Length: 349
Image 1 (cartoon, rainbow, N blue to C red):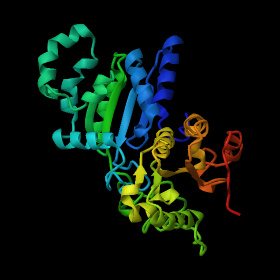
Image 2 (image 1 turned 180 degrees about the vertical axis):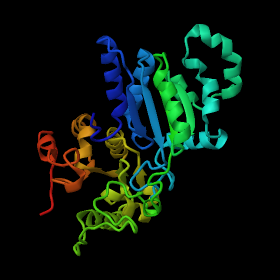
Image 3 (image 1 turned 30 degrees about the vertical axis):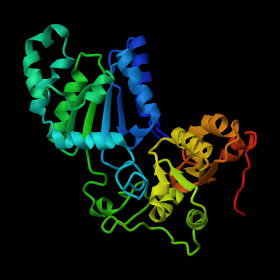
Image 4 (image 1 turned 90 degrees about the horizontal axis):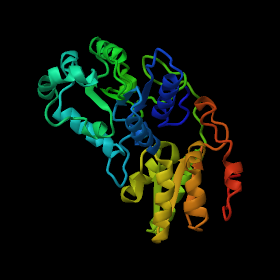
């Protein structure tokens, strides 16, 4: 199942799990892998809420590498930390609770066993996991929480995954892995975006094999023009949905960090937050990739256009985008925005 944009894997896995159960398929080991960036999207929480309620058999693997935005660590109103309170929460788990090894997991595995067996080992389980669970948030949503686990320790990882696979339980599981993006490649670990989505590059140096343009990019021209306008007008603010580097908000943020808002991978929230700002007299520039604004279309219609609010939508990567592929081509924006009342569409010549 292709995860074109973000935050969709849990919903897809849940649908597969329900279908397998209804069709009486013997094997039902649906696994959703989601990053700590993708889990900032609202759809992920909708799916977790539904999974716990329906008690679907599924395993959600949370790949927690601290890379919420591209790049993470740019200056904004929230500081230089990842644009996610959940990321801060999971970081606190890592401080308060050591990595879980297979022996600890085996003791706590009791909760996935039939109820009559659980009673035999309940006290052992309480001592093994502690009276207050590190994964309380996920467990309140109905998941059995396992972690944090070192995602690079395969000798530990494999038996845990096998145990979860072979469990007779129908309760959804969240396996929390701590990883390092670009692990094993010094150039990737040193890069601000951990070499996210690169083309051809030199394995030793990490230098990408692409021609350098001498002309300034539209992104940088926009960012610097917005800075010039913002110097004169203190009501101008910028919003991005986890893409500061691709929209020029990293440049704007270095000059005006308190007027730059990175909301994580949450385009719907970004658009409506901009609408709220406009209600109170600010002049928001909501900077999103053309393809990602599709996720916030309803908010553009209802929260901006129908209320006739002055929100500026700055769409980067309009048109064909090369290596990013068909899920990221910005080829629908003119069609889907052109039908909206009061919308003025402008494009550089």
